[in-house]
Image 1 (cartoon, rainbow, N blue to C red):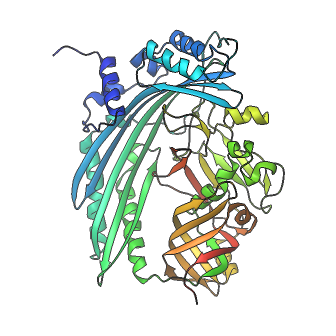
Image 2 (image 1 turned 45 degrees about the vertical axis):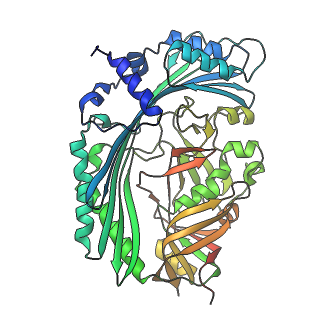
Image 3 (image 1 turned 90 degrees about the vertical axis):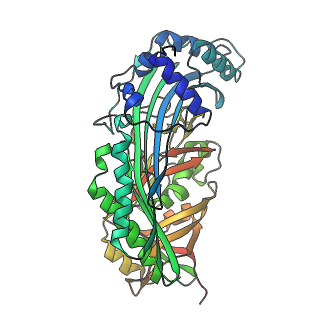
Length: 510
């Protein structure tokens, strides 16, 4: 067999995986070759020099255009899945390629290729250039590395963690769940880790690189009692080091999954109708993300499809409410050192003391509004164009103790987890399934509830928040992914307890 260079091997492997093949996980081995902590990974591994980037950028601007950028990606993803007591799936995927974008006003031309050679990249750039029809534009003569902070430093590369070190995680989750209750009849456990390297080079002369980890450990538990089955799940993760997944994390995941499943055996449905709703801290902020956050993404406002398109500087909530989108929280899933356009990760205040202060911007919307990009330009992969997207969307803590909020609700429901939501981003109308909650009766938490839908309007719900707790929690999970325009990106969220004076609850008619 002829020798294959390290660079050729990596290119070949990535090309096969990108066509949809799943390749076996190999413990250590070739993945250990990928260690490279200093800038210049794509030049060392794939020969992507400044001179080559400038030639490709020149081609992308050959028919005019206001701006062009190159987005290089090399991602290695691993999954281990345990079902029925056995690890029956373990596989990897590798993505390698470059996306090339030309921007003219608010129009985008886009091409991409899996082949990191000059001919393929020039062809993709020529496709992107067709958006314009004017005089050739020359990109910046030199490229300068962008200095960024690191909000998720790795103790060691995730690709150097052998399969033999990951298997015990799902096996221990399985054992722990069964040990917690004789009612547990089935456990699914999985571990996912991903190491994504990106480099953004743009026609303004900026070059930025990032190494983005992502990982999570999850359990789904099915319990059976008197012929009736209930299920619940939980996960922990984010942009964590492998050492995060210790016995304490295993116990926390298994404990919550089993506890939540057993609670559902005694759950009831609340009465249907309009009533006060208290949202628990933490994971319920997914509703904040969906029903309110999307409406503050700048593209929806630039196109005037969002309720908030004329609301900058105006009151959208009570003065005790502040909402931020923050990409700088260490190890949280939505954090980014640099966005997918080469803008440093940062914290963006959306609502301050009830006043709408800003949208979430990429470069196109920032140019439209004559503001600086907010670091919200994101894309799923090199095959996708940039959109303004959320990172970690958070309502900051207020002053009220949580028990006081519950007392103030008097009669309603307490929502602890939501899922399966539908949102009309333009108007903000939403419907969400409450997978876990409690009744509030006479200002106290009583029966567990399930199979409940809550419906309302996001902007109106924001206006109707009458109390905000002092118990802010950031969701510690690693599975959160936001869908928009056919793309999914990892996101985080968090909030304190809060009271909404009235939402529609789809329970049972009295």
